[in-house]
Image 1 (cartoon, rainbow, N blue to C red):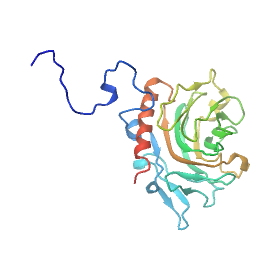
Image 2: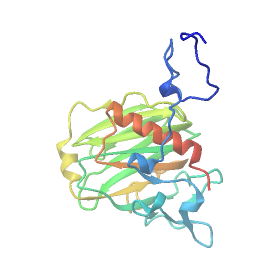
Image 3: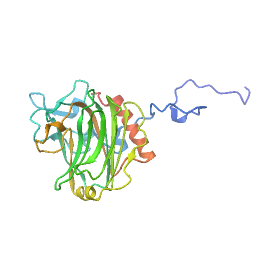
Image 4: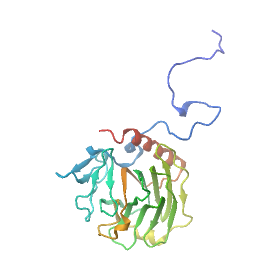
Length: 267
């Protein structure tokens, strides 16, 4: 055989090892990894992770492999949260279906949260909230009229961008008083995140103690029903000590998201 002849091997290779004349498509990420292996706490949107009452309401949402704290109904959630048939938690407009993870983030310096959701009406309203046990300010992610917003309650700092929905990923990050935000359609790469140029000292001070993570509502108070929207939140991934803004971190997060998309609803 000519020593310069090509060698043909009939196997499939991942994109990462293939030399191309043109760039590989940006729509998908190969080499998916389990979110726990990517150092995430994963609230997986399948019913096996949920404890249900006799009437079918969610009374607990246990993170994958027990790594993390179980989410419980917020106080105004009176048997309202239900699992969606296709996976995830159903949230109903102006009805409190919220869940809370007590002391999910303690002495927050850096963290990020990725959510896979479906928002057909572009009115998901409150998606997640980081609310300190003691303090008069909090941080929340919401969607209203197809616009995503990541801000604190006092208005000292905020970011916004158009939601790519209805089926989407949203990644919101925090870094010593600075915020970051990006979003993509399901199955796609996250664009480079928007990052606030300055930090909010007041928010940084507010988050120094234990902070509860609310999903689908803002606090244990009944509050204003206009902050409660309609959506299905399929999965919640939480990274501690990681703001999710560097290229390496975004690549790792994207690989975890690809695993969630293919395995998240499986039993």
